[in-house]
Length: 381
Image (cartoon, rainbow, N blue to C red; front, side, top):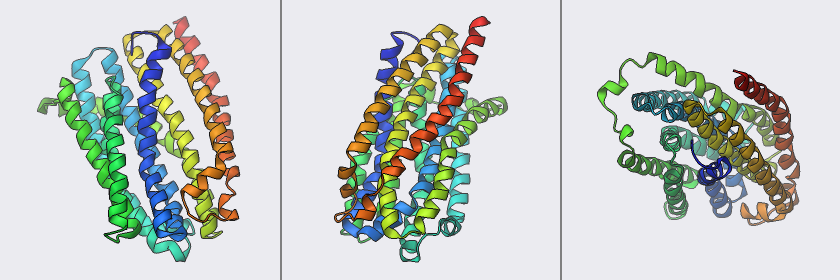
């Protein structure tokens, strides 16, 4: 990413990342659609009542692994092979650590989380079964995001997409098999998601190890990593927090919606799934420009960073305008995807689609001036 026209380089890198992010969301979206249309509105509400918790965990995982990928991108841009190996080793260690911590905390507090969210008693058991199974498979989600961000940092954004598309299709098949003939209910949908994502991660790893020699780690790559761990944590943890902090407000909203009953939960579920599409699309552009900046930062190409950022802002603005039109004017086509007999209460979801953009506009108004200040400061140096 240190050569070629910045606009085309970022766009070519971004498109597979957008596809990967959307297909990753497609896991839970497929669960939602299939559950709603095969098990009914109550089952849909059960899955939807846990969606924001699962989405919060997903955002945190994407953030920390994206941060680790930026550290690797720095070393890749500087052509530091030893540094790249050590970066991959640290990513593995930290991802194992966060897998265990997140799984222990979330699974241990599963009942308490549902209580805080005021989950209706009618759907409580189904909500617990689905959320517990998905969170128990957190390791598979971290595994996939780790290896995909490693490959992206090395300039390969297509391999993660190819295998994620394959496993997404497999997820649909397993959803139907586990729910219909195996009668596993909403838990079947959860296990289909976990198993499909684990397979995607394994396939990405196999191809990655064959394609990139630096992924063939040795024992010495795992030694004396204290300073490298500190660097990765200082980059990864803030990004994980940044990606997940917006979900905290949505958790409070989910609790308020849960108190209104299953119809409201089903409508909120449909709205948030659409909203998450737009958020993850923007996150994909963020991943692309982060890897672009990381490699050019390592190579010391400051003017190229400025041009690339401007190109990415233009691409993001165009994509958001198109997404806005589709979300608002296509609203009457969205809800029937989730349930066979949508009611007036379920369809009323437009307000949800307007809420998040205003929050992002406020955040951008604060961050853009900071960006320009930093760029001008670097140019003076």
